Length: 138
Image (cartoon, helix red, strand yellow):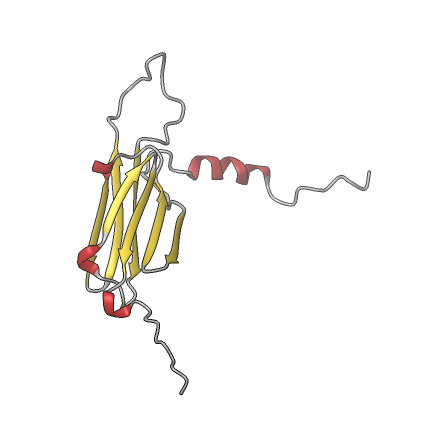
């Protein structure tokens, strides 16, 4: 009997919460993004399943890299086999901005999209690359 816990909240609060959730509102989700340094470049990888390269927008402005996307599907009254009970995949949009390090060559940024993963390659400026200096002993 010690494992039983009393429910302190009013059970009708759960019903209100259920109906307060706006099923029809667009869903805003932020994908998983990794940023790492690899020798003479920085790499950004974002998981964007279900999107195509046409859905993705990359922009560099004032030292910021902005990744955004918006995808809308046609809204249909019925599914192919019946009526919709819940439809969450109708809209997807987000925007994230990243401050570029000062040593990034913004004019040489490249992006590749394959298998739902966006990879952004941000090369460093040549003068920012580490330079080895030989020390001579006399």
